[in-house]
Length: 387
Image (cartoon, rainbow, N blue to C red; front, side):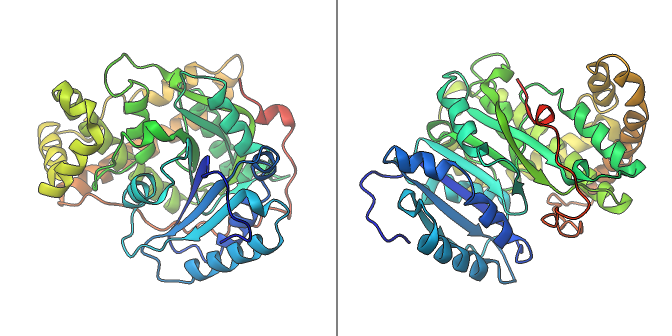
């Protein structure tokens, strides 16, 4: 979808993954097209592609995305710098969508791939360009992240639940090599050596484990994930108790699956990890339930829910300890609340596995993330900059 023929193949490919997001997909896409990346590519005679992938949708997500793309192709000042396509999939799931984009839909000549969710907003126009620059300036890095910002951080008046939520996020920011599956940029040659198993729960945790060890050939090096400066997006926080517990249950299920899968692959012969994408693809093809069998065996061995994966009882206190000065005291209540939520979620995750289930991806009932103008205040620039 473009009014000019591209001379060069797309240098960057952007995937927007969407599952029943008709309420927010328009504003997410409009926020995307406000990125300075398109102007930068235009100025250098380069291009990118934007691929929206509605997966398993039962609403008008695909139709709305198609309409937005048509509008942008007609009026965007740098429309010569991008092509757009909506590629609808009847199969729902982040992993299936990831594999389809990386191995089938993205241009083979693209050097950088963006994966983004369809319910976020860019609050800095230079976010995506700075993420690409971060990778270009650091040859060792394979993934560039930005700063995820909870929408409650923008509220002029914050409730106690908002403050606990923000304190938890601040402590999560101490994790080395952390990146959010909501938005990241990965080198295409690295991504194409990967394949996400069907029953994998959390894609970003699995990808990080492989990338930071260079496909299990080196010790863990968090520097393979670089956080771009002056790059951020806004998303809606879970604040209700019910939604928070659902999200934590999903996280605990996902982290357990990642732990089991990574430990299994680390014990595999090197020839299998050297061709990891093809190995995992073949496993899924010939034995679709292989990950489920691994997890079931693990859950039977580890009798107690606080042993689903290492560090369940300690990881929040380790993050608290990395805080400086008075923050160790002010963030202590959030640590205790987080521990209680984690233990409840782990118990729920264990019951989930023991009932023979694997997948748990409830649709968030968080309202509308993209209504951010009323009652909000901008964050100071210093809050958005990270080294």
